[in-house]
Image (tube, rainbow, N blue to C red; front, side):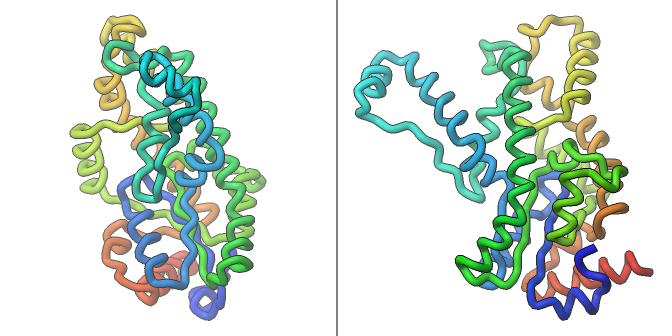
Amino acid sequence: MLYSSADDWRAARQKRVLLFAMSGLGKTHVSNLLREGGDWFHYSIDYRIGTRYMGEYIADNAKAEAMKVPFLRELLLSDSIYIGSNLTFDNLTPVSAYLGKPGDPDKGGLPMAEYRRRQEQFRQSEIHALLDTAYFIERAQRLYGYPHFICDTGGSICEWVNAEDPNDPILAELDRHTLMVWIEGSEAHTQELIRRFDKAPKPMAYQAEFLSAVWAAYLAEKGIGEAEVDPDAFIRWTYAQALAHRQPRYEAMARHWGVTVTADAVAAVRSHDDFVELIAGALEARAG
């Protein structure tokens, strides 16, 4: 582990942390707070995915839709307009919109084959973005002079790693450069995430085997074909199962590779000093 004790962490002149958890438990909130304090570089995995690795996919998809409209088609072909995404740390909608949802095309759904293709593009992009962490640590110090670094990962990090494998290439690389911190939610948090998702379902990235299993189960339970699936109904039906699928994977990551803090404790962080003490407490708890 990058920091051998709470005292080692407190004394470190360069603090490097990677947060992982389900979306909605405070990763971006605390990352933004630390960045605004002036001493922390905020590396957003989802932002890196959208700008470096999937930006062209996203733009090309938007252009393909625009080409279906005669007026826009003529403007695009004459290079009279430009189409691109406007990604920010707080607005990652272009990435989720590109991922889409499977099902009835009349309801905005994608054929499952195309959905799987985009899921695989996202998987590869997220892995590349995670492995870029060391580069951004060095870049943040060399270019901007930031002493501290926080990596704000996407909720799907647990899908692409095997936490039980001490030689997992992604986790081993991240462990060399950061202290990995799991933000653990309570059952009440889980129910609130489900409530929010049910109100406004958003595309997600799924492990391929999990996606195959839930897709087959949904079609069988509803007795329908692929093109009859209501996209929002499917991802609502899948969400709670996705949370249950990810929970033990997060737990294994924390057990073998990092420390754990609670979502309530993260929500109470108001400053750099608060965060330092929160992580110090997690290191002490692990040591004890």
